[in-house]
Image 1 (spheres, rainbow, N blue to C red):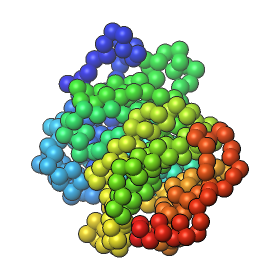
Image 2 (tube, rainbow, N blue to C red):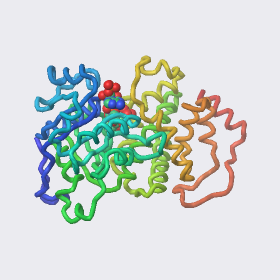
Image 3 (cartoon, rainbow, N blue to C red):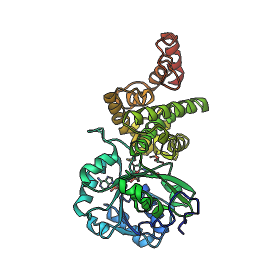
Image 4 (cartoon, rainbow, N blue to C red):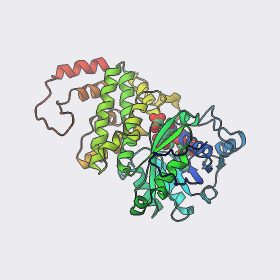
Length: 380
Ligand SMILES: NC(=O)C1=CN([C@@H]2O[C@H](COP(=O)(O)OP(=O)(O)OC[C@H]3O[C@@H](n4cnc5c(N)ncnc54)[C@H](OP(=O)(O)O)[C@@H]3O)[C@@H](O)[C@H]2O)C=CC1
Ligand SMILES: O=C(CO)COP(=O)(O)O
């Protein structure tokens, strides 16, 4: 059932949602988003490259590989030809891991009608270029509105109808400001709105996307420290200081600090750093307990965006001359062979800093090498 905007609701009452959509990517989040759209009455095609997954969706109303135990709406149609999926779509959502956004956007561009807006739903930064996901998609998709959907949204909970909220961000052109009811952000937010899914709109793509990219790296850090035996003080410190890293990077790229305090920043950071449902937190937990990387997730290949993005976000920060100490620590452990205990002890022993960052302090941390070695010993 669609949630109608109430009077006093910031969305104009004459706004009209998109009526047809293509969701590209039939993994956990793509399937959950497609189910949300279909539940709200949007004619939705869900494209997947794995024929078995698509056939099972149509035959059984299930995607057991990615969303076990969830029954999908009758109206949802699985498709495995890109052209057929995009035919007649008023809006497209691309929902594959960040490393595949460019190649999938290129395939979409081959078949998509001019002017149809595209929302990218992956969380990350492209390794080779340092571009945000919407910037990558824009390069491939040419002149059309490109935005994103991001927020604290575990796919399985969304698909089961747990009340969920997320942000839909698109650039607002002059025309969009004159007629917001016709803007892609408002029309997609309405299309996604059901009794259990609530969407907010934003025009700050940088702020929204940086939140989504960094929260995964910070969640790995939280998992590592929790796995190593530390508790709530440590997690709260990492979440709070992780938020500071998000604000700093967002601002350095021209985003707004206040966006980071919204659903795609604080919201997603809190969710992901609080639950082993998160694949990023789960990886950190296992590594913190001393499980070898190859043995995590029982050896299965699982999308853990923060793992690859630990490198891409820190590369980007280094290029911009900003410091992301928690993300750097995760990178050092995952990709540079630094022992976990030693890396976190060094993180805690950094020179004293001001909070918020604006004030620059020039004195050093009083910790001795012996202090650092003692803490490292405790974490290991
Ligand atoms: N799961 C969640 O709760 C949420 C996830 N996200 C974000 O959504 C993105 C996707 O994650 P999620 O759905 O969970 O991942 P999954 O691992 O569940 O699914 C990934 C899907 O993408 C497909 N895929 C991967 N590469 C390609 C490619 N090159 N061409 C075509 N299809 C491809 C996979 O197909 P195949 O199986 O054939 O490889 C699979 O269907 C990530 O960036 C994640 O951070 C955002 C919010 C919530
Ligand atoms: O992005 C997510 C929730 O908002 C999903 O988190 P994980 O990728 O860590 O499972």
